[in-house]
Image 1 (tube, one colour):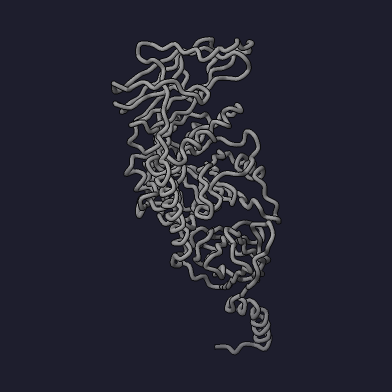
Image 2 (image 1 turned 90 degrees about the horizontal axis):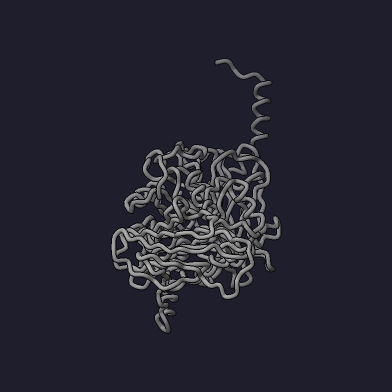
Length: 542
């Protein structure tokens, strides 16, 4: 072997000296200790520097309190890299892999930011402790199954009603556990055609969807984000790019207007989740208290979880919340979502499996664009308990269906219920129901003739089905266009029943009273608190 020349030795020594800062950075943790800022801002960022040559970053964090809850995320110099929420797992990102809730990719040198949300800070003074490990050699194995997201080709051709769930979490949400395979297997076992993946404030699941979709060709994965703020949760159905959710942050200043605009810019449908679920610290920010721009809401989650679990407490108020949009002339579709975090396993008594409730969407085919188009057109029916509930279809005249606006002086509405023997069926006009009619055949058809309303406001008609006096199915609306003529005094509702039906209406289930109501509320709060606690104490998972 030839001896190295002095020139080569000098060059090698210089290279080693240049590399020393990077190697030291890769081996020595960066420790960040600091106070939680007081004031009104709910989010803040802690910067740290990443030198050249780093291929993996691990962030270990601690909120230094058993009573406080902090949420954690990460951003590189140019983009968001993930949001783990309130779990205690370390966040790891590398060039070819990432821990759950986080996004792999290049590790650029420069100023990165640890993103911290004050979910609940009741113990002051409050502090955080963070250790950041910078590695030149990754410890996570590559994840070759990741690929850029693209809509799958249609899984089924032809127009029909497709069954799905618009609120499902995989393990990419910090408080959830199932893989995409487990989600798909359980959803198909319940007869569903699609699920929307509504991960909390992250899109880390998207580059895993392609491989999972190929393994499950009978179930469509619809992309989405649950925009989870401390003042309300909403799904951006169809979103494939991250949406900054940090309402209450001082820098940057994030508003609900910006959130809805970000959803709309990528063709997503903004849908408000569990709008009246107000359980305080047991479910932080779960009820909707933001004031979004008019016309920005495309759907409302009427039922979160199957009706038998939460319906008596929240369904009627959710319907009133929905009706307020409709009364302003907005065409907002009804949907339902299970909010499943366990793929049907380890549910306990107050959780709901995927498909409870089930949303039926009339679409031209089973594809993401077609499902979104169906919801956007208002062609939805919600089975409040699950996929085994009866089905109700509503039509007007010869061709109009749910979601359509009909322009005629007199219109025949026809409701057809299947699998509903013994139930009661109702027509509901502008939020007001007439008397119910018993369903005594299968299929069962009821018709009413209605006149176009005078004035400038269209009438809206839908149907509800009740089983044992409890709501079970609710349809979207058909609108009857107003004539523009002056309204006659006390015109009332011009309903002309046929021999099949004498009009109908639906009675809400009686709400539990007294100790029963508060007992159920307490049980729900305890269950949600246990979920949050389990998330905080979960073992590290990569």
